[in-house]
Amino acid sequence: MFTNLDGLNKAFESKTRLGIMSVLMVNDTVDFSTLKSLLGLTDGNLASHTRALEDMGYIQCQKRFIGRKPNTTFQVTQAGSQAFKAHLQALEDLIKGTTGQ
Image (cartoon, rainbow, N blue to C red; front, side):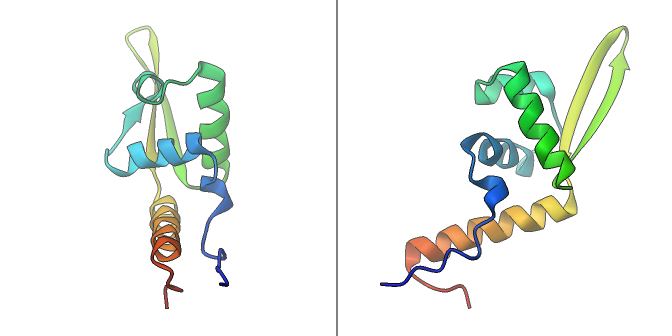
């Protein structure tokens, strides 16, 4: 049996990035602390994965101050949404044994 893995996006192979994108796909914006808590990540781990997704153009980061406290929020870009949906479709096709065509 031949399995075509071409549709899978390497950016989402990491369970951390998969989790980040999953949370952001169902929320308009999510702040750093909430994302960290939901996924059970350290500051450094979350920062490195969000930076990678941002560098790929899949998420946007907005930094601002609320009072004197820094607040960082994230949201999915249109390119990120399309890439993630295509990745999920490729996973579904893989599970169903279809080619997605």
